[in-house]
Length: 310
Ligand code: DHB
Image (cartoon, rainbow, N blue to C red):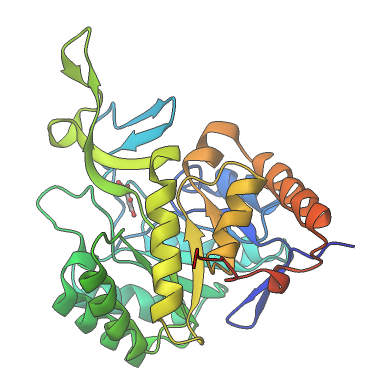
């Protein structure tokens, strides 16, 4: 029997594969579809203090190798996600709330509210690239540190941070040192690569309306960057801090590569949006088949064991 279960912050995920915050996880109906699928856990859309309509459409476009989006955090407000937490918990899977604030105070207010909820784990989003006029927090190390300290003081739930991709070893080291000195128990790496641009050359026009066409890049385009982030953080972070890998996972081979690079759990964003809830069982089965072929029985047998060339 092949075991692809994983543990995060004391919660058991029967499959290490679940949805990424973002696509198809805003309404109770969508979240129920995830709860009743093969996903190992349920991640909710990043929520804000107030209900948000998000940016004008078109704001999400599928492309052959991935997607571009500038949704602008459309969500039903944190109170809604707190309210539906008992219903979602009744499906027996770990439930993760994703939190997006504009500043330290907003994060604090939302996190305090979730202290008294059926949510199991908090994913603190430091990397939304699509709110007009607001930079990605994860690129501001001082502000990131302030927010992590505040959350450490307030949260009575296990929590982690969703990070933007980094591209320079100095930045990885700086962020890792901030994370190592916080009370964080995991990171989610990576969010979409911010502010990409796609062009419809026939129309001589951008593909999405917000921000002059600039938006977050997801899907196959970003897998090498995501793997690099998972691998580099697995080298730099204290072993108590787990890594949730996300970025361009479409199949069992992708999933295998992320675990090999050091990930404990995996999330599917663009691929889930394109294929729907059946993707969780498909990728789980493909991962099992690869492990069987290699004689591995659990993820511990190969997690983080990526070889380098001497
Ligand atoms: C949105 C996009 C993100 O990448 C994210 O982390 C949160 C929100 C959005 O545009 O809705």
